[in-house]
Image (cartoon, rainbow, N blue to C red; front, side):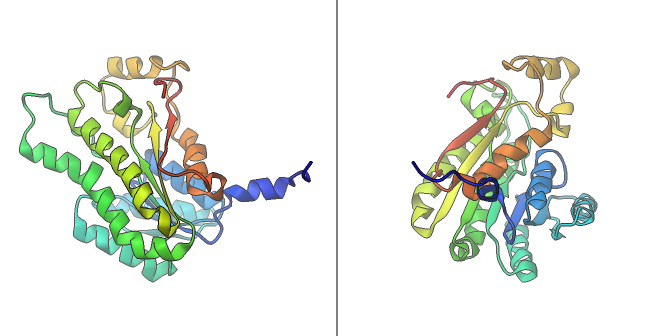
Amino acid sequence: MGEALARPDVLGLFDLTGRVAVVTGGSRGIGFAIARGFAAVGAKVVVASRKSEACEQAAVALEEGGAEALAVPTHIGDLEQVRRLVARTVERFGALDIVVNNAANALAQPVGSITPEALEKSHATNLRGPLFLVQEALPSLRASGHGVVVNVISAGVFMHSGGLSLYASAKSGLLALTRSMAAELAPDRIRVNALAPGTVDTDMVRATDPAAQERMATVSLLRRMATPEEMIGPALFLASDASSYVTGQVLVADGGLTFR
């Protein structure tokens, strides 16, 4: 029989002290919750989202809680801004250990009316941006020794997702990229996993009509929406040493909406 593990040893698996995390879409909703969760366990957090004021407010809130934080307004669909995000992160903190690709575009058009412009806009944020952010971060992730990528997708990739073809196709592509990147980057000791939330009480969900919100809230086994804070635990697991032997996987946090 081995010796019993001490509580600090177990809790230490979730400690991110000294690690630098970039969280896209980090000024509100799931992204801000993850940013706060990471900051609470010691991470230095870079908040990236399109709106400058929202970024600054989020970073100030993290700093008021005792964290080191940096706001870098970034449209993830603009590759020059993606490059600037990584450059400013490394310039400020000297490292980049964790990338959380959470920024999303919920643009919806029905099949038969989808325009090339809409497809490009959706996939630029939901698929192309995350890929190129990881590529820009690769030198730092390789140097980290515990580099991690967490791609936030959606439980909708495992359903028909009627009416959300643009979003679902991009998020499905990001799931495929997660598995491919995990295989290619494993020799560099970089782990890549996906987090697939179900219905979460965010601005994106609140923008839909009340009847749709009710359907989304009650279709899962738990028959409610998640709070953004309920995504902290799954994201922290994937980003920390608690999941040191987990890569190329998808963690579904959907209240029992789907079964994998």
